[in-house]
Length: 389
Image (tube, rainbow, N blue to C red; front, side, top):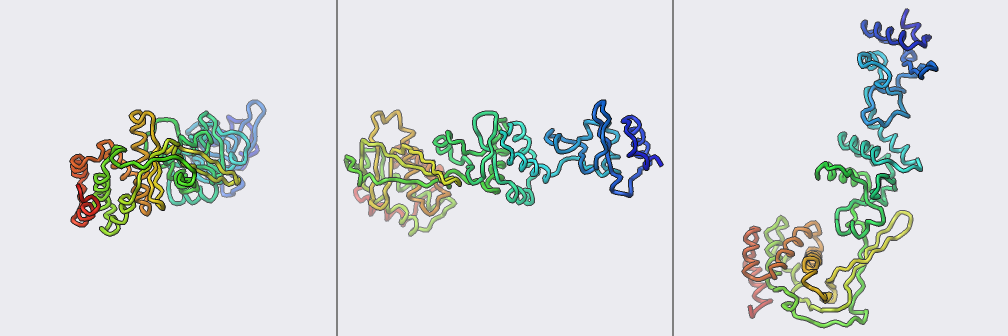
């Protein structure tokens, strides 16, 4: 009798008392239409709403406009009654969060940092195959870091993951990099967040760029051929270090392949120029726009002509580390053009060797410390290429 008259009441206290009574006897309505919740509206009475329009808890305080949140209205002792008898959901689901993001996508308003943080922290806590599939199918836009507390949403084809810090610095003014939390969560949550972004459509900046290098040979640039010893390194030590890496790292390249990889180095002519040695990076966006940035790389290896160009520096000591880094990257990319995943490891090794000027005794110790060695086939190659040594 009480239950049948419940929906005709409008006094909050009376409704609460009847809810408590019904809860005591584990009452549950047989008719779905009877599953309604009274939502008071201050001194102006209130209204009965369907139970599916309610949730018990809103942990992130994001759904106040979409659902009636019962924890803000009723005593917690009634929560079991609402979930059991009225079948009110305890919390928003993944679908609710995705729907909310879609609403943000269609809105012209900027997204607050707090809302963005709460959404993606929820996603991180609910990772899984179904999560990734649902996000990939239903999210067309991703958040972009702007340097301010406001977040912009852009089409995921135009949002990139800063997997290369140098390229990130080069393109940072374009505001094309995915958002990530500023709080100190450590590297793991951010890497997981980047993984999610990748799985739903964002691309690594390093894989998305088109690199254009105009030939210095055709530009009428004045240059002087120099000996490799004049640019602070021992070529034999460099090649020996590379051969050890190719043979003994996880790459484990066969002798013929590793000899083929270093052959280009053996045939190089080194040319020094006063002109800047630059490279252009072009990034195509879904709008048809192309963003172009020029970067001073200081060195360039033109494989077709077997030329290695070096920018002459006015203050070489002040740019030593920068030069060593660019040199190492260029050599590594040239040697490992078919095994690009190993470029960072080889580049780091060559940078250390460069600091040591690739002296034979230092290279021997460096290789020993890394558990690298060369074999008889490699010794024959080096003896043939450097007979006087």
